[in-house]
Length: 211
Image (cartoon, helix red, strand yellow):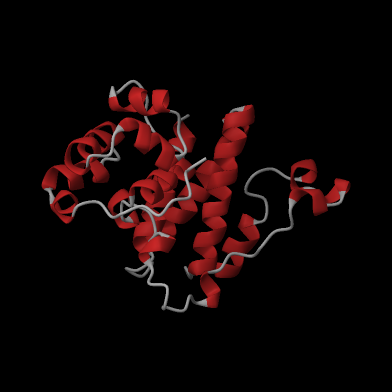
């Protein structure tokens, strides 16, 4: 679990360097971690604490023996090291938004009940598969991309990753490919503000489709 201490921003010179920007664009976390150590003085043990990882896992990543693909882990790294979300192909992270700026209500995902509050015969895992309910949202969107569409897609991708970790992804491939085609279509008409988030989601769906 990431530590809860406030983290200082990375040096501006590091964020502006071509090597750093290339590493972030490629999501090359071996280089990212090495640069953070060299240029910001954040050593592997602190990287691990900030990002909710074990030091051994950080060491494996820095040595190139392990990669990061799960979006939730990438978001933890972005938050723990204060890497602006856009550099990693993510949406703006909460800490990038000034605290005085009101957050639009449409950007807030619906709050689901805690698992214990679902009746046994209505719990999502009992009657549905990852992505159920997303088709209805996409149909209502009818090609119009908005914050609620992005939230629904991101939730589905996270569900797909969890299901893949626990049960494998073979059974999900048709649904993943269907949603990948839909996201690709939406990219053609999406506004510039939402295009990077759709590109990130398309990349995550593409990774899931080939696993």
